[in-house]
Amino acid sequence: MSNVTIDNITHIYGSGESSVTALEDISFAVNDSEFVSLLGPSGCGKSTLLYITAGFIQPTAGDVRVAGTPINGPGTDRGVVFQEYALFPWKTVLGNVKFGLDHATDKTDTESVARQHIKQVGLEGFEDKYPKELSGGMKQRVATARTLAYDPDILLMDEPFGSLDAQTREILQDELLKTAAKTQKTILFVTHSIDEAVYLSDRIVILSSHPGQKKEIIDVNIDRNQSRREILASDEFEKKSAMARDAVQEEIAAANQTPT
Image (cartoon, rainbow, N blue to C red; front, side, top):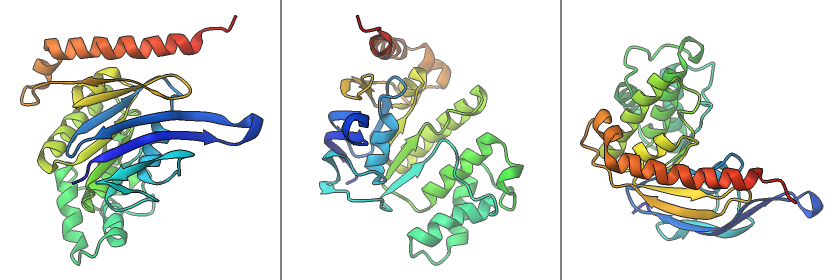
């Protein structure tokens, strides 16, 4: 089981008069093999909540549990994919993907496993290339392959496609859906894109503007066996996109209101 329970999470940066409350009393669960996106205005604490789940940040209050066990730090059961790739420039594609295996598992044939995942993300033939020789989309494929290679139960993804061009973004979205269906991993995904959240997710957690609180959860019931074109033209996609857009715009408007 790899379900995630986020229980009454509050996080405050700093102390005293300079303190900032990033998250306030947030609770929800991500079910086993479910794809859940975090969506909300800039500064609502989406990434903070993801990093708390990763174990990089200890919350001020509340806890996060994986299969009922509180997390107290990073673990190999949770793999993180960042927006900025976080690749080692002095390592090749193969070296970057092998890195996670060398440090997170006791597998003996790390090169074979790494090559398998490089092929899975469509980079076979690029094993000996360095990050400076790759496009942004290819770098993100390497980062994803590195995370998938050590086979975490849970993927935590922080706007992994946010800096990519539209065409590459769509390609990687579709590849992520195929990976999710094949591996049945639990995924918590941060995005600013409403359409991306609806296209990818089983559920969307909308966070309010600063401080981040759970505003609402939107269930998305899309048949993933359809083509991208069919999904985007479906009533369900249009309906849930409108619901999410209204919720986010309401929070943006609230954040921009000038106190009287």
